[in-house]
Figure (cartoon, rainbow, N blue to C red):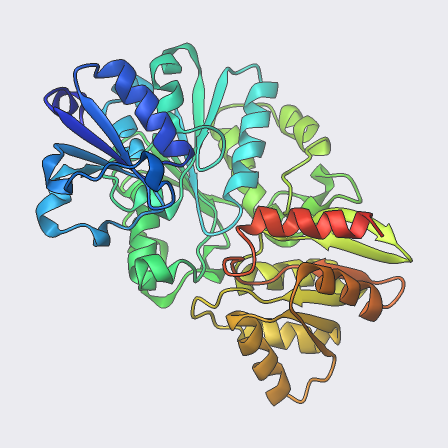
Length: 422
């Protein structure tokens, strides 16, 4: 929604009052002082308006809220922070935007891009799903060289503008509770490049055929209107010998950064200097500790079976146990089951919808190295009990945390705390 439409609004509703909603309120109050701005959030009834939604001229919807909950009559009033941001950029400002999306690896890729650009002497901003909400820096964008934005499918699904440079890490079965079909999920993701214009750039992996469903398994089916770059995996030697970033699936994602550096004419020496000290993010193949000869790895962000499979394959022959389970979003766990059986590792299963499904599938295969648990303390105790000395206990659950934990961050943090207390 453009500013001229917002200027005529007398009543604006912020629907969803998380970090993005709070930033939207602050921005709109500062810029549109004549508007009456109110809040609605299911979890915050004490500060929420009770007005009928039809009384508002504009409704700014948070990314976690599906627009399906609104009547069709209200759809013309709906917008989002990301839409407001993109709809009001000048072309010069849009040229500064590097957008990153994909099912997995968005945050790590965004962080590495930002660090490389900073080491190259560029003034950068980091925002979107990682960093700060984008309207927080709209008014200062001109003072920076680049804004690197991680954009989720929720933020992209109604967007009809694209960044100058679009980076697409990968695509796997996920978020069907929101998008319902893989086709709709892919369409939402594709908005990061589908509205690009001549002179824009899209970077994705040269390994794209390994992760795309049949309806979009060729680049031609993506209908990319801009320059396309297919990036090779980053060489493993760019990272220290012991680095988790030598995992093949991470090298595949981070190869996109190398392709970006070539396009922006950033010397390879700067990329190598950055990768050798790159710390990454919590809860992504994160080394926790070694206790009683057992290595513990926190991969709490692995919320799809594909992510867990990649983690187990990276750990390789050192895998002694894997912790699985969570909310079942209709995932296909067959490949995960095959890898578990091939690794002959213990499986610590959290009692949950996904956990029950995985337990049942393994039982059908007569797999006996199973232990059901109900809480994080039980998970950690089981990790110490069943993991052979000299092997690795991997928290990589292959499903979202909801139902048992607030989010993957809470799950991973508690896992680390309990291990370190032993």
